Image (cartoon, rainbow, N blue to C red; front, side, top):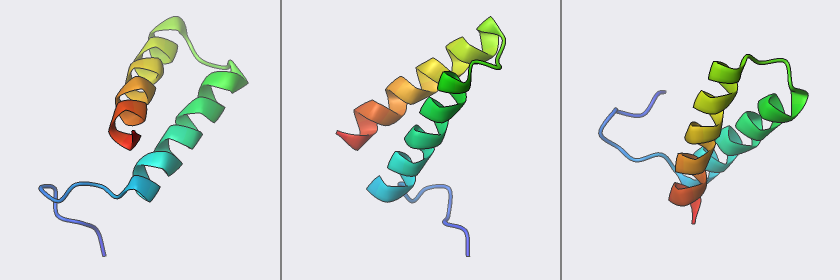
Length: 50
């Protein structure tokens, strides 16, 4: 069952998304714009994990 939008994600959810983001960036199959957007999202995730 999905979480309501106003409920914060758990550390595990954030960390899983961060790992997936890093894997996509490391694969290198993205445009510059896509890479920048993923990098920014990764930075947000890392900040929220800490």
